[in-house]
Image 1: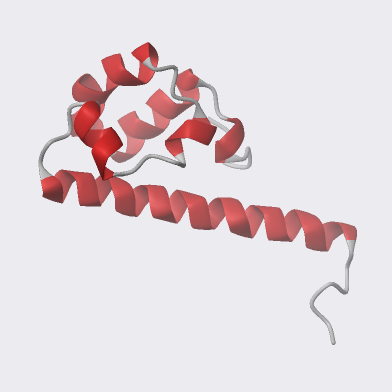
Image 2: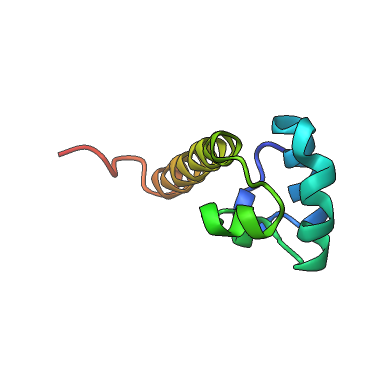
Length: 95
């Protein structure tokens, strides 16, 4: 998977690759639900605790671990977007 590609544009297959990389212990649990509900990168970034429960991750600690990694992914997405904006306007942060 290309790390430079925005997570919000990931396909279902790329979401599964991310789950396999970050949470290999949950791939069997999450795989069916991700495919069944067609969870792309955009949907992945919007998952909440109750969604994880519906996808079969019932343990709160495991939910928090996944949500923490999703938060990091969202932050990286925001940083990438800001970098894209600033590459178009070189002095976007200067006063």
